[in-house]
Amino acid sequence: MNVAGHILLCQAIRQQEVETARLILGKGVDVNGLDGDRTSPLMYASQNGNSELVNLCLGAGAKVDLVGRHGLTALMVAAMAQQEWVVERLLLAGAKVNLVNEDGTTALMVAAYKGSVEIVEQLLAAGATLNQSDRDQDTALNLAIQGRHPAVVRLLLTKGANPYQGYGSLVLAVSERAIACVDVLLAFGVNPNLPSSDGRTPLMHAAMAGSVDIVEKLLAAGAEVDFSDLNGDTALILAIEQGDEAIAARLLAAGATFTQTESLLPLAALSGCVPLVQFLLSRSLAIDSQDESGDTALHAAALEGYRDMVHCLVDAGARVDVVNVQGDTPLLIAVYQGHGAIAATLLDNGADINFSNDGETALTIAVKEKHNNLIELLIDQGANPNQRFAKGKTLLMQAADQGNLSLMKTLIAAKADVNARDDFWATPLMWAAHRGFTDAVQLLLDHAPDLDLNATNKRGDTALKIAQFNKCEAIAALLKQKGASS
Image (cartoon, rainbow, N blue to C red):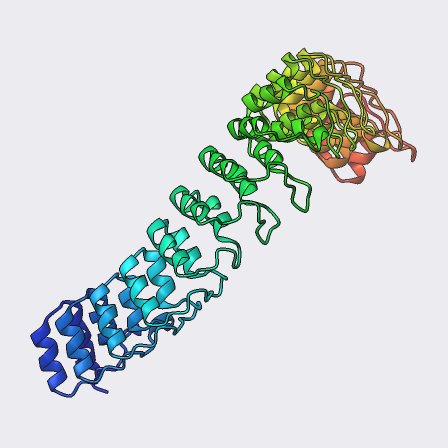
């Protein structure tokens, strides 16, 4: 093949230079070659819609069904470019109407997605398969909906398109919030209660999509308001999950009933929508109801960091110390997440600052998670500075073990026991010496006048002996200077 000549031919057709293209073809350049983009001259001509160039290519022997990039044919290209005349010309030239590209898409599907009523009619008249589906199980009808083309949707339904194939056309239109297409489908009598492959009805999908208008249309068409999916979720539950007060109110007005009542308020709180929670409380939902995990709405708000929601709930009388299945209160959850303002609100409303979940308190959690702002808040609010971790390790030992000078200062100022011993009889000073943290040792020496320099652990080791064993000469010198013995 004359590669240079073919490149010039494709360039001439792209630029719609008819005489140049005619001249190049007259020199014997192959009209059925593909360029670097795997596109033929006829495809370029079909795309730009130049009738002279299309006829020129066909007259030169162009293969009308030649397959190019991504499995495209000239007919698909023409449909994509909405070139009505070219589609007609290619069909007259014998183009196969039901060929598919590498995604299983036909020319009809392309035309439907693009919204060309005329081309859709041409292709159907030429024998296009109406309900064929692509690799994603989409039909021409579904693609018309995705493209938001109600006129094409109406045409396809009139011609016999199956609205229940695959995912379901009404569910798709609802999910896409294609209101005009929803109107067409309902006008054709599509069943508003038929669930899609995920077990959810159009009304449930409308609740998830957040469209009050579509919810209204479906209810007017007879949608069943309390239909539940395989998880037991109804449209109302899904609306609450989305934090949609307007849809929840509309569904309740239409007769929806509360199911899974214990989990509804926590679910609403997770959405962060304060008006929705207030609305549900006005419908007499129990403010401290607990879901399967034992979480209340206050647990959920503390987890997500919704300050306004927390204020709303405590102002409405929510109990601040309800314990969930994991043994956590809202305060423990807020501290774990580092939500200082929420922790402060809970404490101001009576949360138990020293509540322990299997040894974990708000303060121990704050220390482990290194939430320094919360550590100061909790100590200022009266948290016990001598709380212990596993194996009897105190907070001050933990801070010394980490070399966390700021925390050590805070704990010492809060009267933490500088001579406390863990299960191995180790003291904070021993932990600092063991880790080689000279500054931590110095801090204890400077700020703890009652520090026992010569305390021994279960092996009889002092802090000085530990420092010498670990070859921490600077620490050993400091301890000797203060009168420590080995």
